[in-house]
Length: 452
Image 1 (tube, rainbow, N blue to C red):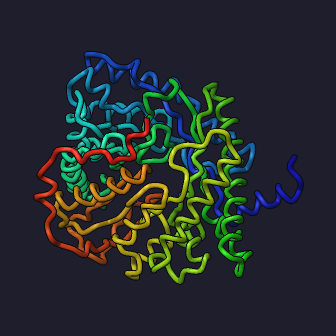
Image 2: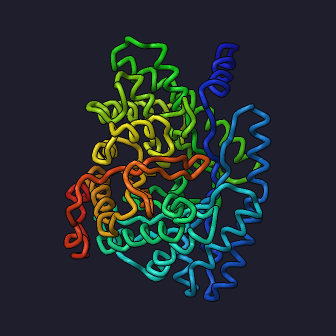
Image 3: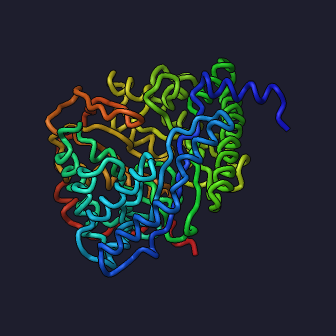
């Protein structure tokens, strides 16, 4: 039962502390849309998406009004398009344009799933799709792309890593007149989850139902506000406060997801209880770390504070929902977090420190702007380092870096909306990793992969 205090507390969270449902994401399988003729396949894709998601946006808006809870994004994730391209052949960009048309018809913010899973090698359709990613992202507004290049079970596909360095750079080149926004919609994963509702990495895994509703909640401002009421508590007390707060946030996500599932007539999947920041003041993961006692995010102690936060969020969230999934933890996307932006501008937050933080956070090197003259091989090496952290630690890691074409350290890119803006961050070592990257092959899976 809810009492008056619980209701007032929730109202305060929404009105003053930036609490929101970051996204309701409808995942749908497109495997039944596969066809040997790409045009027929595209027509099936469009028809299925517009049929199943016809009421997704209006349902989200109705739930917002019913409960007074902001739902920021309504999104769709689909089967990795490389699987459809394997059957149909032809230019995969046709699928991207079809997804874009469907997104505009149903009114969603993004569609994720222009994706390929190549952690152990390339199958039919994978290479064609990956090579088409720069053009697909440059010619659409609502399409997000991801490629899984490694896993704890399979190791790291270094041929794919080398290819993705070139793809990221080309995506930036093709969108340089729009602040290089192409790679801001492209994620390179190790251990990608199949039920992630957050963009740009969302896709609908082959083990998922035909259609499902997944919810992503967010509340960095709420966690920070709760910690402000305990300025002198020890770190055990800090962890307990975060757990209790994460429980409340996740319960709200469970409520919204269950209601959306009932209204749309599709199964409820998971709540992703990640703390996803925004560029808005008061909605920052970095500011939570500073509330714990760090003068600024990025200094010594930042990794330990983030580890505490990430663990406490998960422990609180799993008590609130029977179906927690996706990424679930704390995101550290630099350009999307006001505190991270400030720390990067001041030079207190470096890419090396961010890499260390990815060992204990929810994802990885996320929304980081790098110099425009960064080579494809260096981008591949960054991807390889991050994938190694994920592979060895049996966790999801990802890279979303944006080469700022024509810009240097200290200049900025601005993407608008939740993608935010950020300074070009220095890569402090300009020595070459090219020979290592060009060796290709596969980094073998670690010993902990043998768990059967």
